[in-house]
Amino acid sequence: MRHEFHITPSDAGRRLDRWLSTALGDEPFSVVRRLLRKKKVRRNGLRARPDELLEAGDEIVVHHVLPTEDHRPDLPTPPQ
Image (cartoon, rainbow, N blue to C red; front, side, top):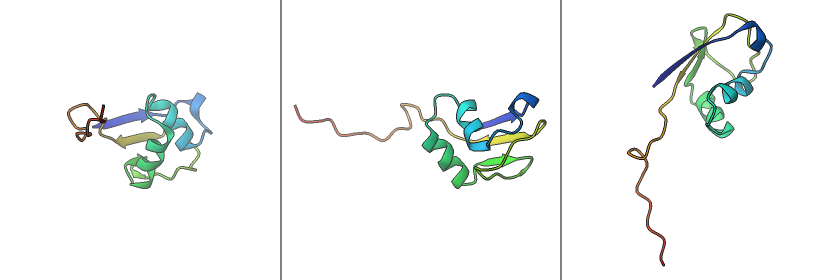
């Protein structure tokens, strides 16, 4: 799934990793770091680094598949 975001003047100056954690909402910070590490986040068409400071008008694109029940591996049932 592809998520596109446009940075507003109120978000300018924030670190990309911290802002992205807020923008993705329910995703833990470790998922945000993994997306950045695996080059799934682009800022203005270029690979983004976690420590980059955002500027008003930046375009952030995240290629991210949200986990669903159908895609989770089968976990063994705990013994009773």
